Length: 218
Length: 246
Image (cartoon, rainbow over all chains, first blue to last red):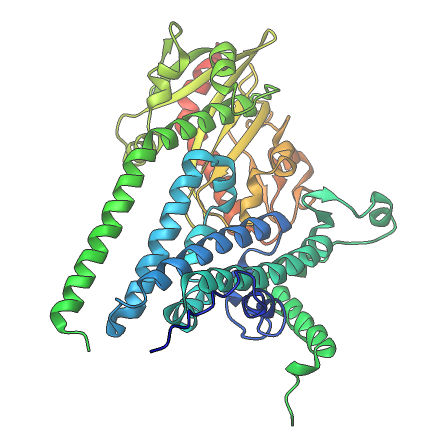
């Protein structure tokens, strides 16, 4: 009979830290897994909405990952997708209601994005791929990591779209009036969704240039 | 293997728990949300009249201070004034614009609110607006000066216009364009204010006083704002004409 007590894994073991850091680069939800593209197009015309969206996705993702991870042993496999959807939808509506009641200004900024979170395939993907098979704490970290990987790309895209499309950062004019007098014009194309896709493409290009692991063999 | 019975029970309990949780949240948070909405409505009215220093905390206080009279106007242009008591309890404040404009559309009798703001001796008439945007309702307030022609200011709000595009109608940059525009031409005919795609410069010289620039990439929302101003002002027109005739 083994009296060996299983050693408790430290909260921030290298394995757990990896859950936080790989989604930032090696398995980034947007640039590597190419998920959540629609919201990356929809909310990145300005920096502020992109940041608020990133934070909301972070909250919903971490919370639903934990809930699904707690329930994982009782969920019947045949209806697991439905269960996941119910959890995400409930979480999103709760977040929306709380925001409306206590931080009304933020909730107004979010407007339709809150609904968009439900359809964000990154969240469903992580529940299905990770939370269904792991304990709550790693699932929590995985949720945070992936939401950050998503948020970073969103913020980078929004930065360039707002700077080049409107000449502002956080609605604060950064391109001097002199440049306009000299003939500089804001690029209206940056405001439109196609340029978000092209920006994503450029980010993927730069990321692959610096991250050799991502380059396929042939 | 899970039995069918287990799956049904699991699903039933899950939806009941989720439903209970959501209804509880909705019921408990409703008073806070209603209050926020009332404050937002008051804030919009004050902002369109260019009252300064309006914060979430002091909105109600300032609303009761600056709004000196509320009117309920009907389709014949008669106004029913309300001056005593708290303005937030007045009959005009409780009017549901959506229902009244629907009645107006069907040709029935309707009642619309007007808020009269006294800002340092200057009288400003604030008319609430409501219309249909790209993804959902849009609304706002238009403040007219005493001549019922010159715009003193506007505010807009929306349920879910596209962020960064249509949603820009709420920004100061868009709203400030309306200031000092006129809703009647020199002959006294009602022309409303057009939100013009391609910019005010593309309009004839004599129409430029009745136009503002649309939002690039937000054409449908811009058109919606244009239609909203026109349609709602038409509903107020009997009252406005009566006041102008005096």
